[in-house]
Length: 530
Ligand code: AHR
Image (cartoon, rainbow, N blue to C red):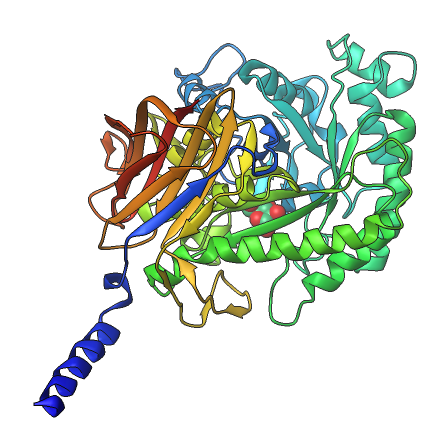
């Protein structure tokens, strides 16, 4: 009798252990406390990126020949969608493109601009769109321009002259040149990056960490002497291939440039080439681990930094996205390069990245989704019109709602372990353990708590008790959900399978609330706390 009981018990235990990882979710608990603060959310984490690549600029942002464009040649349908993203700043003009870009080619009378062979993405660059067109675009949509200087084939003098052209009111040659081009007032461009991915062997003019630091320091000196209030972003690690040493790169440039820079830029692209949902959904943890490592190095160098009156060094997640389908040799070239189409699982990963920015709000003070239109982008257009890709919706949800103070949320939920896998093409392998099914961040502003929750579980909803530890819920709680019929669901022209849907309001009792987060979803709860 005892023997058969034990036998059936072990059968039950064994069958639980053999359940697919996706079936083992359990109820969860979340506790938040408006007094447990991480830091202030910087609006610049809702930045974006426009590079002269494929159809991001020409045929995306700018298409003067289209009946859908305004008098400046900007696509109006695209611009309306761009405005919906509440973009704080836009990085321009690259990316790999910038390492052989000479800004003087893109200013002055359009009929005198010289076409160039574009070597990063194998295109002809007409230079029809340049600094002035870009800054006018930013002003029209209400975003700050953020310019990247050429640290590959460019010189420190060329960088200085660009700052003079943009930020000096009058007097010297390049300030007067801007005026002659029809722009009497200086632009006062505040954010400048010292090159792009200079750690990558693929970068034109690639340098080692010591040489990059020397060039960046001298470039920064001339740029600041020209415009003292600018903020400078150094090119941190982007190369995570097996033979690279991204931590050594970051440590070297932080040590060398600690008195000079305001941000260190990190880049990440993830993908799901093996079609393994659970591995893929864990990739935001890799971003969080890299954030932690950079945070530690920043802390260390700040102990001996000499930067009177300046803020500490912050992290800029300067390029991030899902990118793996349009990454074969052919998809990387020409006018239709990098035209990635996104599905629901990609949108959930983007939700995870945005949660990482909020959870690390004390140190991550800038982030730019790469890129804005057509090229690995939340907005996709053709001559006939545009549509919003799945990844548009998490970005819109966060940029419109997640502001104020980031809260340190307690989460108790089921977890899973991944296999060993590649997070992106060419990268080293990773393995993630104890990946929480619920990925959460929360903000507090003017009496309102906003909680964003990705339920990574593919098959099950997760019933969750939510407890406010300081103050009670007041009034009804608003609920918004990004989800779709299945994890591979995509959007297209005239078809919106994945988007934000408003769900029925919830009522809480006192300081507690119970909610079931649906399988493969991103949910936002908005509650007033009194
Ligand atoms: O965003 C596409 C490319 O990815 C950028 O040009 C480069 O910086 C990165 O490798």
